[in-house]
Image 1 (tube, rainbow, N blue to C red):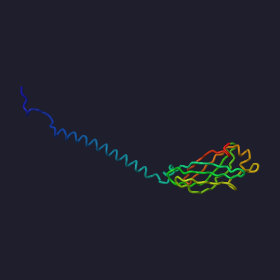
Image 2: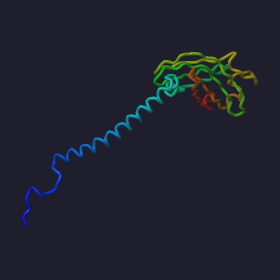
Image 3: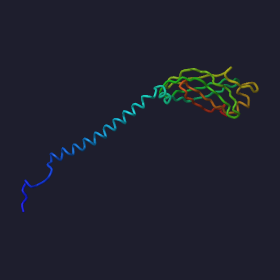
Image 4: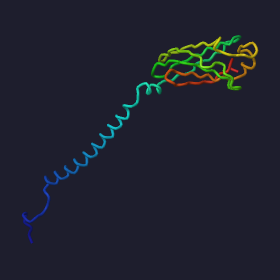
Length: 168
């Protein structure tokens, strides 16, 4: 029994390569267009976010030092901007943690704080309210308490710290 080349039935290499190329191209184009549609939808969603709202997350302020000035009701607060954008401090509030007494209520500051820069904010009369005794930080009721100091920026972020007079 001999097989002649005319009786063989097989697919030539050229036809096989063209068939495989057609299958890969059709499946690849489906994956490509699906991926491009997903990227386009993601880009469209990002277009609704305002740049100002994105900058809210780039603000970061650190309280470096809080000084309660002896014999008075003055406070000096040293701040450092470690964020990636300039910040504007809007208001400061100080609350006695022990009895929830408001010492300074939404004091308007409106001071800019540049990137990698520090700022000293001084508060005193009439912003600080210390009604007991002589009205200074030397009184035992004020000296032995902890105070929560909160500041708000014009973008709506707030930063807080807890401090005690004379490091008690």
